[in-house]
Amino acid sequence: MRGCNSVLLLVQALAKRLAASPLLYLVTRSAQPVKPGEQVAIEQSSLWGLGKVISFELPELKCIRIDLDCTQSVKEAVTHLVNQLSINDREDQVAFRGGLRFVPRLLPFAITKSPGKPAVSLRADSTYMITGGTGGLGHKTAEWMIQRGARHVVLLGRRRPSPSIENIIDQLRCEGVEIAIEQADVSDLAQLKTVIDKIESTMPPLRGVIHAAGVLDDGSILNLNVQRMKNVMAPKVDGTWNLHHATLHLSLDFFVLFSSAVSVLGSPGQGNYAAASSYLDAMAHYRRSLGLPAISINWGPWAEVGLAFEVSEKLLEQNGSNQHLIKVIKIQEGLQILEELLTDPTPQVVVLPFDLKNLLQLYPTTAGMAFFAEIERGDTRATRLYARPNLRKDYVAPRNEIEHKLSELWRQTLHIDRVGVQDSFFELGGDSVLAAQILSLAQKAFGIRINPQEAFKAFTIERLAKMLEVEILCKIDAMSEDEALRQLSK
Image 1 (cartoon, rainbow, N blue to C red):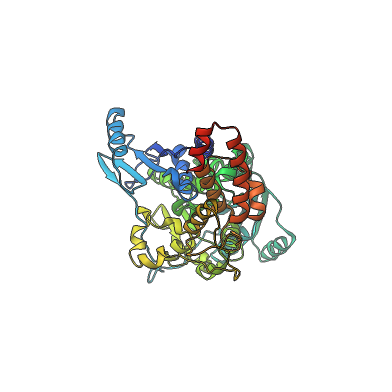
Image 2 (image 1 turned 90 degrees about the vertical axis):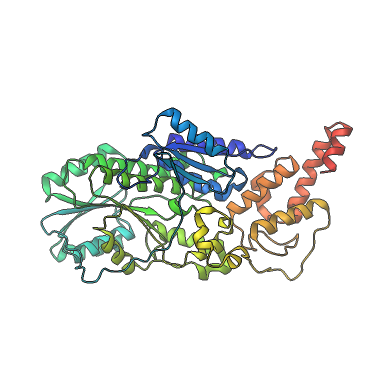
C-alpha cells in the first residue's frame, strides 16, 4: 500500500502544476503475470490497478506502466527501460521478459458450460469459509454451496448479518446444515487465525475459501487520501495475504478471490478499488506458481447484491441516458459461472455481461488506448463519436474568450457537439471525476487556482468563467505591465 500512497501523493502534486504536465512512468519488476507459472511480485501489483485509473482521470499525464524482468540483471533491465522511454507509441502497458517486449490486449471470450461436465460436488465431510459472508452475496454463495452438497459453512464478516439474512440462515440450519457465523476482520491476521484455529478444533477440515470481503469508497484521484486508500485496500490486500498465510498448512480444494473488472479495465473514481483488486489478481497467479489452488474472478456488476451491485448503481447514476448499456450479472447466472470456474486451470478470468464495445461508450476516454484496440476495431466510428443529447432548449452560446475555451473543454470531455454556457455539466451526463478533470485542465490553461467545492455548486461554463475572471484580475493586479499583457494575450 505504501507504493500506491506514494504515487497518489505524487499525482496530486503533479495535478497542481500550472505548467505543462510531465509524463508519468510507473516502473515495476515482475509485478505482472506474463508467462504461465512465473512468480509475481505481488507487493508491486497494486500500482498497475491504480495506474489504469490515473490514465482515465488524468490523461494529460499519459501514465505509462512498465514491468521489467526480475530474472535479468539490473543492467539488462535498465537497458530495456531506457529503450522503452525513447519509444513514442501509444502503448501504455508494457512488460519485458527474456529480452522480449509484451503488450496486453483485451479480447472477448465466452464462458460456456462444458458439454457433459458434471455439476460441482462439495464434500459433506468438509468445511467451507466465505469472507464477507454475512452480506447479501455471501449468503447467496452459501446457499449455492449447500445445494452442491456442503454441510458445514463458515460465514466470516466484520458485522453480524441483518435480521432478514439471519432468518434465511436459521431456515438452512433447520435442514441439518451447520452454519457458523464468525465476527472478525479478515485484514487482522490475529483475528483470522483465531477463526481458523476454531474451525480446526470444532469443525471438519477446511477445504475451500471464497474471499468476497470488500469495501467501496469511490472518489477521484485528486480527492483520495491515505486513509481512504487504506479503508478499501485493507480487506483486499491484507485480507488476501492473511488468508494465504493462515491456510498454507491446509489442503484446500479451491481458493477463490472475488476481484473486480475495474482492475483490468480501469474505472474513473475507483483508483483505490482498482489497486486493491489488482493485488487479488496477482495473488492468484502467485499461488498458482507455488502449486496452490487459486483463481481471481474479475466480476462485472452483479444484480441486487454485493459491492459490484453498488458499482453498477453508481454507473447508472453517472451515465443517465446510457443506462441501457449497463447490464448486470443475475445472481443465478453468476453462481453458475462460479461453479464453472471453481476448478478451472486459469488463474484469472474477467466476467462481464455486456458487449465490450459498450465500455467505450460508457467511458469515451478509452478511445485510442492500445489495450482496447481489438474491441475498437469492430466499429471505431460509433465508439469514438460518443454523444449525449443536449438537454436545454434555451441554448446560450459562448460570449467571450474564456467561455469559448471552457466550451471546448466541455465538448471534448463530454464528446458532444454543442454546449450552452448555462447548461449544467452534471445534467449533460458528466460526473464528479470528469468535472475534476475539466477543472484541473482549466486551472492549468489560465494559470490560477479555483476552489473545487465552490466550482461544483453550480458547474456551468458561465459560472466557472466568472470565477476565473475574478482570479485572473486579482493575479493581473499583482503583475508588471509586460506580464499582464502576456497573460491577456493567451
